[in-house]
Image (cartoon, rainbow, N blue to C red; front, side, top):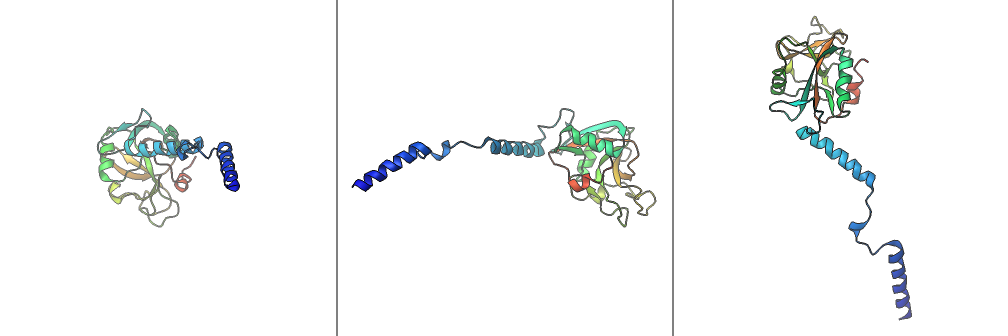
Length: 204
């Protein structure tokens, strides 16, 4: 009986010193981990309803993203940076996944607007004008988003003359052009971060 009493005393000491008597749900939670989870949830929610987007971004029918039209002209590199800086990790040059989405956004742009850079890029050294096009968040560019005869790299032969895409307001479709041209832009807020490799294709 003496050894049983000793074990009980030892267990009592352990629970009082080390807090073993507290229920599991009362154990302190690492606040750093909690903050990380919260931040991730915000970005996920933004991709669904865009409620956390900057105020300048507006909704269009049939899309969960929000968009901002930039009519001040600049190079594609400058406009790329402008869109990214609106809300780092969540905004970028607009990426269109369907003809419907492109049509809805294009309908908000006056036909006499300046041309507008969008988030489609062609890596250099492709073999054909329509080869290798990708978006700033990763993934290909649907062929039916392009205007008639586009992309054409200016003359139908791929020589890396035109590796960036813009919206032609008169037709509501995409065309390719070289980066020094000064156009406006369409920015998109959808909570999606940039594809690092594609981001590196933009000139400063």
